[in-house]
Length: 150
Image (cartoon, rainbow, N blue to C red; front, side, top):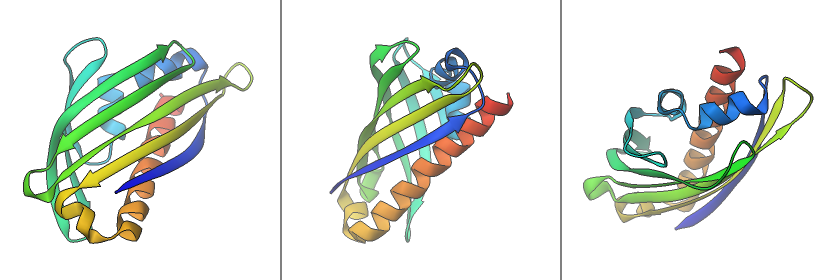
């Protein structure tokens, strides 16, 4: 089952600062809902452990996050894939673009695609879609607040 989530976040920080934060494992770890660990394994790869609850299923996903199509400080694609044991798998990515709006504000736009399989996929598309949108919204709001206030 696949879905697309789009949105935008205004961040009270210049583009360069937002770009640095998008590449900082500590800031990403704080912003990713349920993230237990996020460690850089190369300049463009990170290993992640995330605990998520989707409806009645709570699962720990172990996976990889890869940064691609890097065009500093304006855009990149972040892709991830996680396996949650018997719960199934989740994989997806987001194209992220940064546009300056004045000297100290950045508009971050994202278009994310996600795909789930296994037991999670049996929960029903409405639940998965609403949970995915909520998680994406939480990530970008937390990220924006952290970077804008940091």
